[in-house]
Length: 588
Image (cartoon, rainbow, N blue to C red; front, side):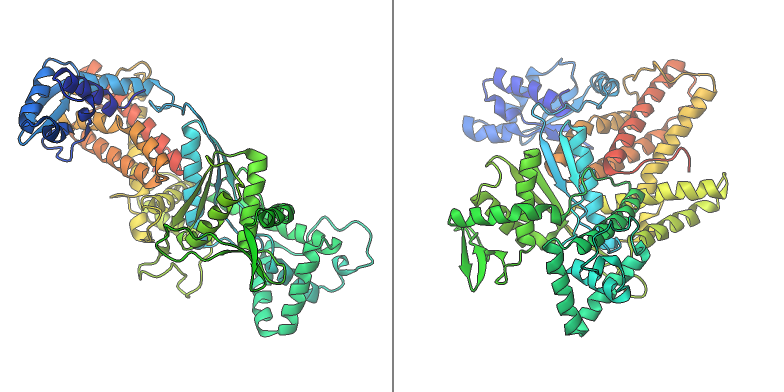
C-alpha cells in the first residue's frame, strides 16, 4: 500500500509534466505550517531557475491543472511559489479504511527480505544485570521487532561474556572456599554433579570478592590467571565448573530479561567463537594483513580519508592471548557460516565506537563477510540521573536492574492506589505493566545516540509525553468500545466515514502516516520516531475525544463511523507499543 505522500506526489508529478516541466519537481512534504495546509510542494521554487520563469507562475500553472481532482479539497499557489495542499476528507477516510482492513496497517513486506543478526544485551555471566544493561536490551529488542514486522528474518543474540580472566577469578575463589570439590581433584574420573555448588546469589558475591582480592594479592592474581589458562586448554574439572557458572547465570539472566519483555533467539557466548580464532588468525597472516609490532600481532586499519587517528587493531597480545577484537572478529566468521546474514547490527555503548570501527575494517579487509553485507554500529548514550551523572543508587553504587524495575513499579502503584477500583493484587499487576511502559518509553523516546536523564517522576506521569499517558489513551478507547458493545451494538462491520470536523480529520491524517513512520524508524535504526508518532496519535485522539460525543451521538451511522475510527486508533497504538516492547492493560 503506497503512502499518502506517494499518492499525492504521483498527482503533482503528473501535473508538473503536463504543464511542461520535469516530473521530479513534484516532490511533496508534510506541511511545516499546519495552520495553512496539510501538505506542501516547493518544486516550483527549484523549477524557476531551470525554466527561467517566476516560481509563482509555475506554481499557478500546476495548481490550476489539478482543479477538480477528487483527491484534493484545496490546492493553491502561494507567493513566492509554494503549492499548498489540503486533501479531501473522502480521500483520507478511504485511505485509512484500507489501512484498517490490512493486517499490517498498510505496511508492505519488503520485496527483498533480509536475514539480520542483532547483537544486543551483552551481559557477563556471574554478574547481575544493572542499569548499564538497560539501553542495549530495550533498543535491540525494539529493532528486532521492527525488522520482523517488515518481513525480515531477524536473529537476536545476547552474546554473553563468558571467557577470559573473570572465569579464572571465579574458579580460583570457589577453590579457596571449597577446596575439596571434585572439580579440583586431578585424579577424579567420575561424572561431575548435575547441581552447581553455588546459587546465583553466592555466585554474584564471589566475582567481586575475587576481583578485589586479585588486585590486593599478587599470588591470588597469578593463580586466577593460571586457572583461566587451564580452562581455555580444556581442563575437565574446570570446564564442568564453568558449565555450572553458565547454567546458573543464564537461568537468572533469562528471568530478568523476561521482566523487561526481552527475548533472545540465541544465547551465544564469547567462548563459542574461540574455535574459529586459530584459522582466522592464520588467514590474516597469510593475506599479509597481520604483522608483529612490539611483540603483538596487529592489523593496520587506517584509511586516507580518516580525520582522526585510527590505531592498528590488536589481534593477539605478546603472550599469545586473544582480545575482544579477536573474539568479535571470530564471531563474525561464525555468524557468516551459520546464518549468511545480509546485515549485522551491534547495539552497544557509543564509547565502543573505535573498537567496532577497527573490527569492521579488519572484517572488510579480510573479506570475512561479502562486500554487500552491512556491518552497523548503533552506539547508545548514557542513562544519567537528575544530577547529569551516570545513574546510581542513593548509596552511590551501580543499581541492579531488578531494583530499578521494582522502584518504577512502586512509583506507578503509588499513583494508582488512591483511585483504584480493583483489588490490591490487580493494581500491583497493572502497575507492573504500566511501569514497564514507563521505563521503555522513557528510554526509547530519546534518540539512541544521546545521553538522557532518567527521571522516575516524569516517566511515571500519566500526563505528557510518557508511556503511562499512551497506555491511558489505549485504555480509554477500550472502555468506549466496551460500553458501546454493552449497549447492544457490534463493533464489527463499522465503516470509517469522511470527517466532519477538524479534530476528526487531523486524527485521520496522523493515522495515515503509520507506514512512513515504521519504515523510516527501521531504516534509521530509530525507535524514537515511533515514540514521537504515537504521542502525536494519542494527542490527536484526545482532542477528537474531547470535541466529539461518541457514545451520545444520536446519528447511529455517524456513531458507527466514530467507533470504526477509534478501533483503528487502538490498533495503530497497540501495534506501535508492541514494536517498542510493551503492552497495555485492559484498565488503569
